[in-house]
Image (cartoon, rainbow over all chains, first blue to last red; front, side):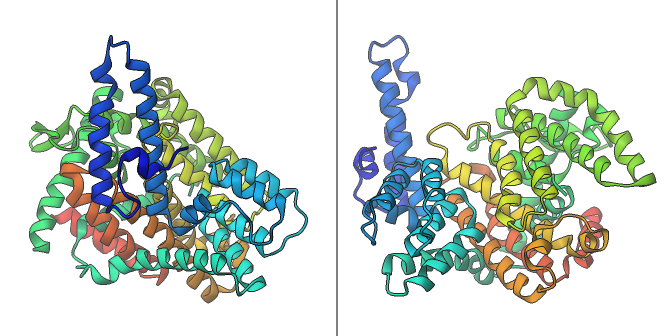
Length: 191
Length: 285
């Protein structure tokens, strides 16, 4: 995939609002409704797909944490091991299943292995496993800044989850919110 | 300021609930309406297609015909949620029948039979969703049988079910919604597992937290709190990318205040006492 920021026509340091605005402008421009019975409809469809994928990539990077950005920008392992380079390339291309399968076949469970497993776990939303892998990676190689940054990002995200509550001035009388959650707990499908 | 928001939020929430109830009644009849709950009203607001100007009209309540209430109508997201709520409720009842023993099986078994015709119809309309629910519940059953200590592995099955409710998870341009739904589902599963620790320990039922931590309750509490906060952090991050229109005040309140408050209440063991007080208070308003 091309640089998602270039696809949307924004700078990498654009604010979330600027990105959302650019995305909506492009969607309006290339929406299939504007290209019905038009010989350019196939091109418009391909362009829409590219725009949506670029937007998804940026959303994933910005809402999902630093790991995504790290693996997007780096394709060389810190150990120089070619097997790990291949895993990184798969992760960068979004081929998580292939990356995980490659790692399963590597017997050397060193810091790099744990870091990459943590990255894959994080991308799947397996945050508890991600934390364990990243902590192991940092323990095995405490001087590696890539690993420690990834763990910090995960911990920062955990901080954001509680941050909103602590500063939100929550009033226990917000019945609306509690009722929603009450019923979520009572009727959660698997319990 | 918060009091004003609360009243407005309540009206919006109730309009969503009433809209869903009417939709279910229209598509599946009165019996299916009996199984509706507020969590599906919350889901319907997330799945709403027309977020800017939802159609809200005043309609007579089917349960209490003397009351006319604001009711949300004419939205594809509402129809989608109505169909999926039937499928999810049916599988929940099926699960209860399998889990309960002796006389306790009777009520869920009867409810399951009552809902079955509606389930058949809903599964015909949403075959892909019904299939995903079945596959993930089968996966969860395997994980439970293997007594897996991986909280993520167990939570993943339920998270994927919630993610599938959007009916768009394979399509590009939906990353924010995918992440929001996945991590709400993950959060729900884990918080429920914590809430059921005592009961599951007593009944010797599967609980990934018990499998992972056995009796190390304080260590578990710290780790579980951190992982739940991580999911809430992603939910917040993903929600910021969505345009919720009219539903924003309610959804934002639930996501930024409600979920963390319930989390705190469950993790400190206060939830079970709070639950009855809230039911009484909401019922009187």
